[in-house]
Image (spheres, helix red, strand yellow):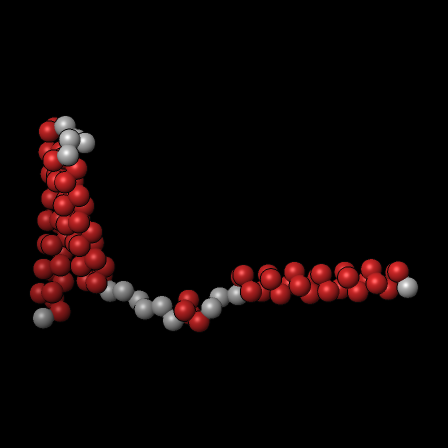
Length: 97
């Protein structure tokens, strides 16, 4: 009798573990229906991120977190990246127009 109870416990424990495993690792519907981004959509998002980073950099510089030299170097790098992104956006829009 005790052996049958042990076997039932092992079976139910295994089924429970299997159920948890499936629940955790089975992909849901939201992962199956992702939208592919175009290069242009990615660039617009990147532009927004760069502008936000520039605003944050200016704020942090005003609060004294960066020296003038560090601020100028980071600002120039971000502005150069923004210029590259804007240039690529213009090229892609000209092609698609």
